[in-house]
Length: 123
Picture 1 (spheres, rainbow, N blue to C red):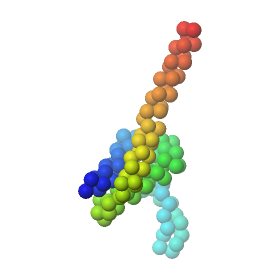
Picture 2 (tube, helix red, strand yellow):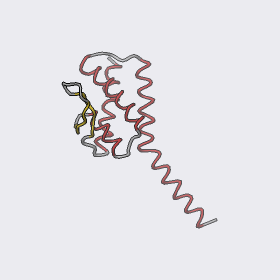
Picture 3 (cartoon, rainbow, N blue to C red):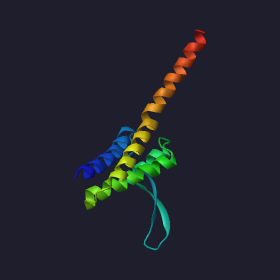
Picture 4 (cartoon, one colour):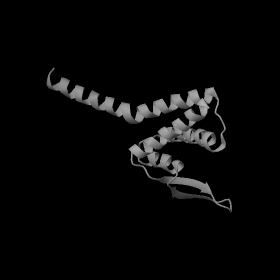
């Protein structure tokens, strides 16, 4: 059961990012019953992940990675399909990097900018 909880947890982290960044929806592509590819706004997690990309919070690659977290979490929760240890280790590594790119790197960049400005004032 540990991997089931872990899969649900990484999916919940993705939901938490969307909530924190106030993302409520996003544009997704889908195929209609006639086989025509269309787009629509969606409030499900897939839509929210695309919303993070639309707002420039995520790169396209990071959005695709977070969709994998959504799949792993959905399969674990709704189908009781347990991910492998390797899948979970990869998912955790990816979510760590995504969290870093969203929250830590902008703060570190801001601190660098302040430090550089201060050093120019006081050579």
